[in-house]
Length: 167
Image 1: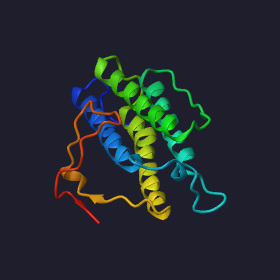
Image 2: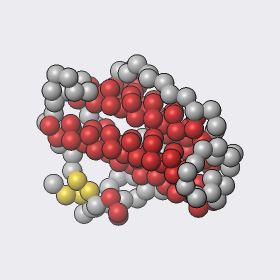
Image 3: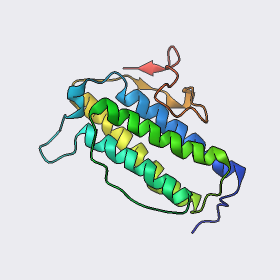
Image 4: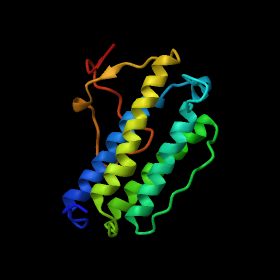
């Protein structure tokens, strides 16, 4: 256990900012990808982007159940690509809504971050790498300048600032 108080407004704000960051980065990674990208595999035994994104949705569902005091893991069956994108952002929104509500955070916030949120950020990087490998390259970005806002956790993210992206 850490010494991070779950009722501290700064803790709640940090978790919400982490979710907004995840939504921004994941949104950029999946935006404009064709259905064929969803099934791409770098090796026969590796997971596809669709399977990875389904796992990311599961991570957000799990993090919410940790926050509300009823931790439960579920392995969802991947939906078609665009539906899976919607499912992921809906799961992030539900978690953010819970944090915004002021309801108690029942689990150690550091464990919630190091588990579901950090893992989803790692998987976002995998999706970006698979996007490049599959021939659907996206531009890099100086994310420290990105227009990330607490509470903006849907797929409707702000576009990159002019001059903030690079090849």
